[in-house]
Image 1 (cartoon, helix red, strand yellow):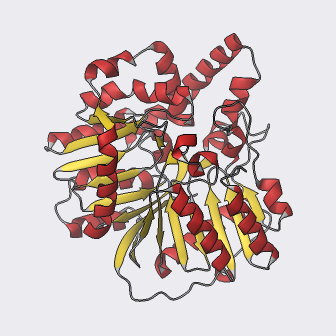
Image 2 (cartoon, one colour):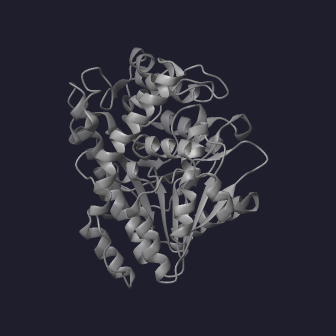
Length: 435
């Protein structure tokens, strides 16, 4: 968030520490208390009960094609340019971080070319992009808003930071963390990949390991176009209508997904999505979740599952973009382990960070998307997930997980306790609501 840049760069070191601490305590006092108000429901016992649960919580079931899953930024970058070049009518993109870099430039250049050819290109980005630095330096990366606008792309920033809004905590914290694309009402994607250096650079240059899923689905396209337009119209004087974006008819569906879209008016969808895994699992849960900044509510989910004999595993990764992230993450490991979770730390030979947000239950339910296992994703940010109850899809996620585990090690309780320091506690408070 841009506020972190302001706090960390404009003041003396003692003043930064004091202001960071006050900021953390104010935010924590305002928001942590409400985490205990959301209660889990009774465990489900069958697939039909799970479907009923999702329907009751506003997570629709949609017919779709078999998904293509991109576990490599190189593969997705190539596919993104292909999708852009194939567009004939419109491209809708929502992304959290949008910065110009040599690895993101081909995507932005392709978007501008299409806009100049007459394709309607609409682009929503979050102002958190303004705080992004080039890996290994203090240099801020350029945000693409003005460049895209000059290139013919329609651009809006979600809930732009401004001086008059900074005193209002709710405005400050409301962020759009979703990453999704819609091309000609036919190709739809979502996942964890932004359009910036960290998402698209090679692993040996500080890039992230991440995931993005592509499907075709008339129902998903219709819902996501509506969500895009509602968000766009809330922050842009240029009104757009879902009816102006036609949807292409798809071939016979091959599977289905549940669409968990926590948009402007759907707060609580992400919490319900995570609950489904902890309620539905009978044997094992895997959370590929490096940003697990826990609350008592999240720990209760783990306790409820482990008390039923479910093994809860969390795969984290060191080498985040900022040392404070690692410290905040480390502070949470002991309470997670005391709640019953087993933690594994991914430490490959290259300095690669796992940015994926994948959840797997019993090898038959999987979620791909933007949501982290933390308070911010559940109650403060806009998030989006595709959930599949198809063993063919789940197996791909599980195979990817198995490829990560040889470079991972179990975290001991002794190691976790080393992170329980006052300094790390302050980092935890900051990233609990601002990470």
